[in-house]
Image (tube, rainbow, N blue to C red; front, top):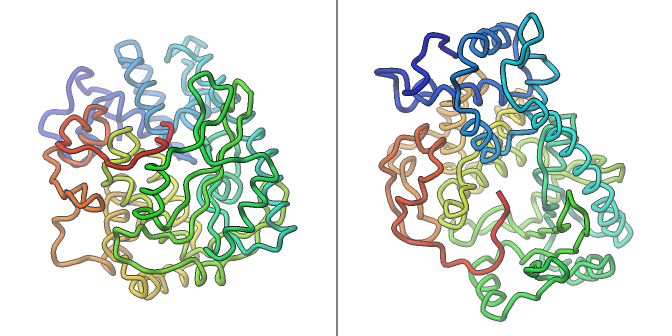
Length: 401
């Protein structure tokens, strides 16, 4: 994976632009380190690579990319705890050791603070008897990563029935949450204007505007609750409410509280649909959150833990919702990065005749365009949004990178 003899200033000559080996050495190093488990042979490759090339790497670029891809805490843990950043005689092979240790430990403490707060909401939902399923971050941290320090979290995504929304509002408002965004001073929450509220009500009917509460902490600016009523955007043309997903949801414990999460097959569908939407929507491309390694790591780790019988039943579940393109898109590109973790037979189950959509974006916005840059080059090109000719028309909050 890592070529210790590579030219550190340019991508490998003649390398496949759709393969990570064609990326800059710093990006190759980041990709090698951004894993939940590092096999012994890969650890040795990383150590040898840093021993030979560490002094010549652009570490500013490396840190920037690790932050953009949401994997800095994971990379930091691997570098420090596996002692990959120190030579056999104790000399540093990577500068800024303190950054990596501080980021991991700081993220762990931040996630603990989020957990303390979001546990109150889970108790409120349980006390009110509301059907719900928690999605994404908390489920990944506690049920998949088993280490609250390696994955950054932000909001709490809650799937619920539309008819339960008034009761949900009572719970969150009773805990001090309001719909709005933080003021410039950071001292108050400003309600969304009428234009923003109307746009979301008409065009983004599968979700609600977020509910927020100021945290008044250095490590957490706001606590954010994101309720949704369907895993599919209105623009996808798929009309599937939350009921069937909630009926299949399974019991779990999150932040020490009894809760529910999507069943394994639905978790895969959710991860694939969200990855496809965010990778191709102008809203996310504008803020540079369209392509991140963290999303692919999440999907791969879910796949690794999914029983074979569930994977075998997945195609039928996917076809029942008509989201084959989204699932193929996510699995196709995940396999580009982690071929050993994404079964080729599984991908083949969803392979369409026309694959032009793999290179397109803006379709969910009604303005389909085609990328000129290959996938891996886009993945590490922080200026990729400059090639977009139209901007997002979605008013309101922009997720933090």
